Amino acid sequence: MDINEFFAQYDSVALAFSGGVDSALVLALAKRYAKCVKAYFVKSQFQPEFELNDAKATAQKLGADLTVIEYDILQNKSVTANPENRCYYCKRDILGAIKSAANADGFNTLLDGTNASDNADDRPGTKALNEFGILSPLKLCGITKSEVRRLARENGLEVHNKPSYACLATRIPTGEVITATKLSATEKAENELFKLGFKNFRVRYSPAFAKLEMSGADMKLLSQKKQAVLDALKPYYNSVLLDLNERKDDE
Image 1 (tube, rainbow, N blue to C red):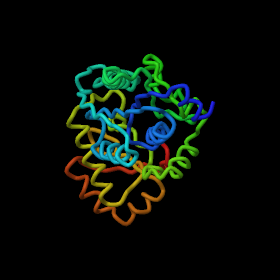
Image 2: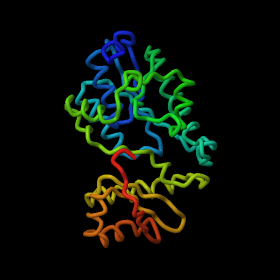
Image 3: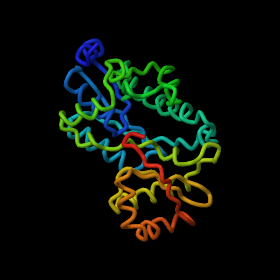
Image 4: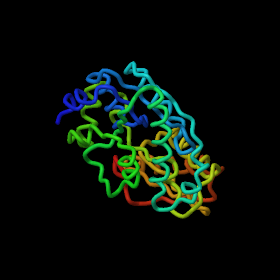
C-alpha cells in the first residue's frame, strides 16, 4: 500500500498531532490526498509551549484545521507514580481525549505519526494505540524516519530537521513521582539552553543534580558556553553533570 492508496481508503480522518516531523508529514499528506482531515493537539503539563507553537505554525502553513485540547494529565495517579509503563497510561488518556473530540466532530478514523522505523517494543504507548484502533499510515506504508525527513523537506515543512523531542516526563527517572514543579523546572531549564543555541539535548532530572545529554555539536558549544549554562541552570538545579555519551539525532 502506498500513501495515496491509504487515503483513498480512509478519506475522512482525525490526526493525533504532536507538532513533530512525523505527524506534520501525515498532516501534509492528508491535506493532499484525503477529502477531509482535522488535527488535534493535546496540551498537558508534559508538552512544552514550543511544541504547541510548532503545531500551530505547521497547521497554519498547511491550511489545516487544528483543535487544541487542554488536559490535566497530573490528575491520573497511574501516570504521576511514574511506573515503567507510564507512557501507556498517559497515551490512553491523551488518545481518549482526542477520540472524544474527534467523534463529536464526526470523525471515526484516527491517525498518528508512528513511522516504519519505530520499534513497538520500545514504545509502551503502542498498546494504547492498538486499543483505540489508531492507524499509522507512515508505518503501514513502510515510510522510515529518514524518508519522513526527506518527504517533509520536499513538502516544505519547516520541522523537517527538527530533532525528536520526547515529552517532559521522560526527563524524570522511572519511579520518581512526577510533579508540576519538576516538569516546570525541566521546561524552563531546557528553554534556557535553547536560548543559548543548543539544539539536540536533554536535561535529565535528579533530586541532587541535572544531567545533560547532548549531541556532538552541542558538546562543542558547551565547551564555549560552560559558565553560561551553569548560570542558566542554577535557579533550577544544585549542580550540573554531563553525560559523555553523544546523543543521536532521533533519540
